[in-house]
Length: 86
Image (tube, rainbow, N blue to C red; front, side, top):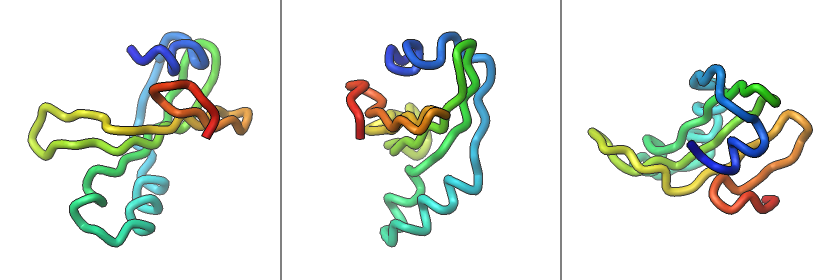
């Protein structure tokens, strides 16, 4: 459990890959190695919804989230680790 996600969304009820945002993010990065690690997910929690964009390291596990952004439905964008605005 990520404390920033927990604080803003509560308990996670569902998580799904957002393919359109994932593809758009990858198209902006021209380095094919980095493209594979860029993902976007829709999260729904007991307190709200958000889009999470992450950069994942690893190809066959264990996967490690190196950085990420939580984009809450109210428009706020927060660093996934620090909770600070982005």
